[in-house]
Image (cartoon, rainbow, N blue to C red; front, side, top):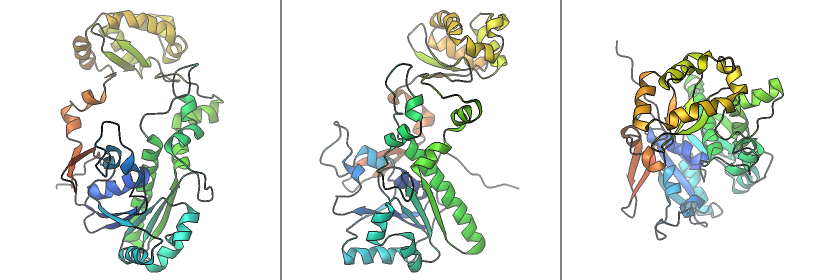
Length: 360
């Protein structure tokens, strides 16, 4: 499967995270991805987004490495005619263009869709905007987390709004863009014609509000900061600490699961009126926490994991990044690449699925 897009040529006119992560998706699956970087700026800005602990002499950062795997890198000044012609020559037989240029900038540099399609009429041109094509406002992930309601909902009650620690809006926008491109590829197989694919960080953010959006649209409920809690389910997201001080969360979605949880803890809360149904548990979740907390805090993590797994109780251990990648399954998702300076860069696969051909 890692060569499914072999022969596909992609020109990446995108920087930072969302656009480049689309390019990495295709490069992982065998496509030739040529990343065009701004020569005058020293390349993609994320090359310089380094942690204090990173080597300052390297021309790439861990951040940059996370979404720029198996790509060819070409530094060009598109204001220079010679460099511009190099790009146009590459575009002539390209299959896909990935762009996150603002409209005004793209027009000025003559890398907009109307210009490119004259050079390559069969091109699939994928355009990623911030807010919209006609809104030049700078759009970074945290800006969208604020504007689309994520920060208002996130964090603890009566505390400062909190952003998610991953640039999740960029990741979600990349998925929207990939889906659009894949549909355009299917259409091209049918008709032989290219397409213009367009999405924005803002639209991707709104499309990802799912149940929280419907809670407002249908019930007039403005989601409030609840920490890890869920507005519709309990106990779901409550944080507990075991006898040996290991953090866990519960995700109890059914009455059957709640009964199993109680039996594991030698409690009979499922028989009490205040906790019989999910609705009652949501209403009385504070009292429920106070009942569950002493029982969980009296059991070690190893014993709790054993009995919860045996009785199919949904739970999760709260792990730091070191603990996450101690898991053999997580290690299988790590991709390594030797860089020009002979250093080894690492990242997690963006392709987290498998396709097996049908065996008759």
